[in-house]
Picture 1 (cartoon, helix red, strand yellow):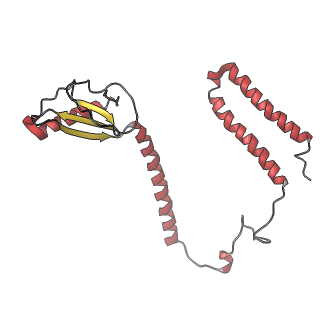
Picture 2 (cartoon, rainbow, N blue to C red):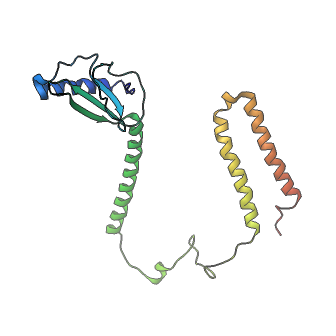
Picture 3 (spheres, one colour):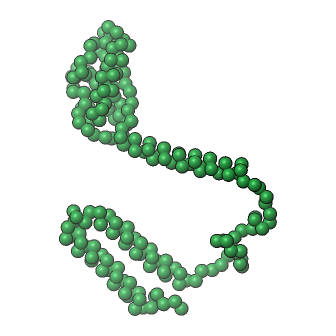
Length: 208
């Protein structure tokens, strides 16, 4: 099984594990050379190699996947002694940054709410407990029907909102698509404009 490519910085980890293995097991371990070393890098879901007869170069060039496991085998009289460590690749480092910001935001919000509850005065009154909307006292019941004409405008908004979703990635790759991409988008927008003109002609946008 060929070794999976890993980050170049993993070379230092390999050498460190080789030294640790040699120090831990003493004479039982063969002297590890920096290149090649009996080091294999596999995905964590795969198994280490069954045969260690062939030595391969330590690592090839850059390839970032999931978290990788570095297996180092010491050749001893009673069989190989396995040493391994797990590394976090750049793929997961991006998620660590996202979760760090998320945790900071949640902790800050809870801290401010807790601090406000300790400092603010608490004098509840019926007026303060009354529900309101945008600072205005509610009028009428809580259930009311919405005119069907609102749904027509909502559907038109939805159609052109979906169009914007297609326009954003198109604008990013416009230089690569060249004139073909430009004419293709003009045809797409033209079809939507024809539909809008048809709706206007039928009086869909007139409020009745």
